[in-house]
Amino acid sequence: MLGKVETIMLTLSSRAKLHSPETHKALQAAEGYVFLGLHREALKELDTIPPLDQEDSDVMIARIRILLHLGRFSAAARLSARGESIYTEEDEFTVQRAFALHQLDKRDEAAKVIQSAPEWLRRTGILHYNLGCYQARWGNIQTARQCVNAAIQLNAAIELSMKKDPDLAGLWN
Image (cartoon, rainbow, N blue to C red):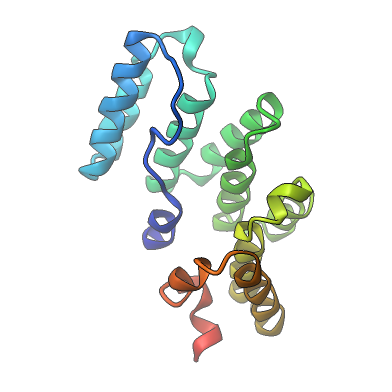
């Protein structure tokens, strides 16, 4: 399970954005802790961010990624839903929410999140890939193959990680 979370994670500072010095320092420190595998310490760093910045998109995304690493999927799903409502243009909230729901075995909710994602996000391939993972885990191997093939057609780079994904192991056996 943790391996799957790690394949989805990116660095915390994926976008250039101006933050207060305190927030910038805490985000940098949290990223360092994540790199070292010290996820609880990373969360503590994020807790030092001033209250006004706690709902900044970068701070929320960093917290969600750390919660996923810690296996706190319910909290990650709730925070992702909050982020989706505030930052409708930020696709990562949708992807992470669907993933968290998937980890909680809330298949219908995860599928609804993916299916309600904006069209432009569905064209990236990541949602088809995630849906393929869900379908494989639920035993729908033929549908999983269709989803993964659609994901590869949209983004050929996905093929590199799919062979290592434990959710897709049933496709290769």
